[in-house]
Image 1 (cartoon, one colour):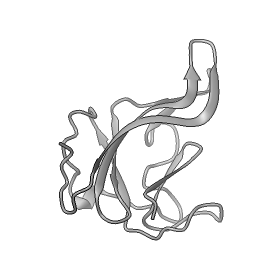
Image 2: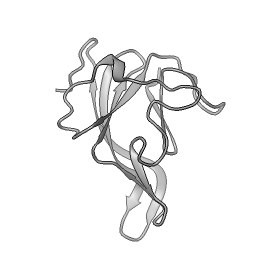
Image 3: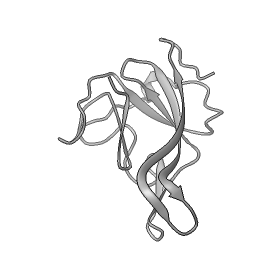
Length: 135
């Protein structure tokens, strides 16, 4: 009974298939879509055809810099969320949530970062079955 899992920069969804032995089993119907736009402007989950599930070769939220939710600066060795990407999650039981990631680190300043894999994010969960709106 889980919806998303964070594995370093990978975000896994409880739907589809696992791609490695260290990943949790997929037991739900979860899926994801990455919307481009503002968090506040994302008012509704999209059509079902736009959602993807994790597969044996890739994740629903694509891995890699500028492919999913973040960019990587190799000079600064810094992962930065793309501010115009809103993750729309279909939960393991078919409900919807939207999420925007603010940071991948516990502390960020001009000189250094501390504790990676320390996500800061905001989300809105729609608990009502059959409703796709986020208001």
